[in-house]
Length: 301
Image 1 (cartoon, helix red, strand yellow):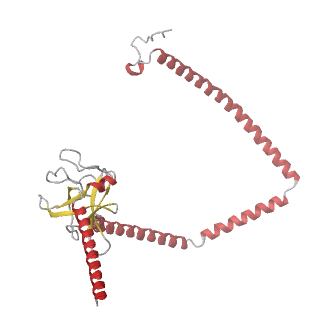
Image 2 (cartoon, rainbow, N blue to C red; image 1 turned 60 degrees about the vertical axis):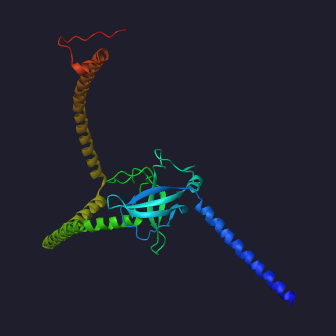
Image 3 (tube, helix red, strand yellow; image 1 turned 30 degrees about the vertical axis):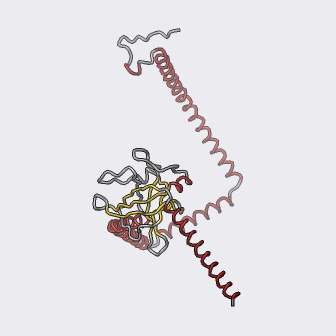
């Protein structure tokens, strides 16, 4: 009996120690988390934040860097103001900051933006932070002065999709009008093709007749070439020689015209050379024109 009581006592002591160690570990982890240095950052969203709650994570490319501390309405009664507690050590690991910022100094990288993101299809949202192109995603214009710890927001993917859908719906009437105009043009073209086909059909076979005449002429040429003799060839050569003589005479006449043209070109080149010499001696004549007396200053040596 004594041995059994001792074993029960040892088992109970072991259970108590295990429970105490577990509670101590949980308390230590919780205390460490509560002691984690952070600073507040405020952002404004011009869209619904449904699914975002206090305690939702703030992530930088998937890495948790803070939590949502407060969600309320902005001073303009339109935007939604979200205050987040950003962990200093997380930003230090990312190389963004080494300590908590103070009022009056640059708060954070001007390229940093916050954006609403969804975790799967459950509807739960969190805040995603990342670097954006400031020219493509400039800070939104607010009707009030933001605080010093303000982080600009960027439209969420869902909002971009909604805006694109609205733009498409607005452009549908214009696209419908253009489609109607295009269909009308197609109908006119088809009608023109039908009229052309009808005109061709009413020509009583003119095209077929023309093709037949071309085939007949080609056959005659082939027959003439087959029946050609040397005498006919010699006569053709004499005729060709006469044509060459006439061409030579024409070339002789053209040579005289060419010589006259070359003389005119030479005179033009001489005028250009004179103008170039004048500009070299006095380049300012391009602006004020030639002198009234026609004199050109001599080029200095």
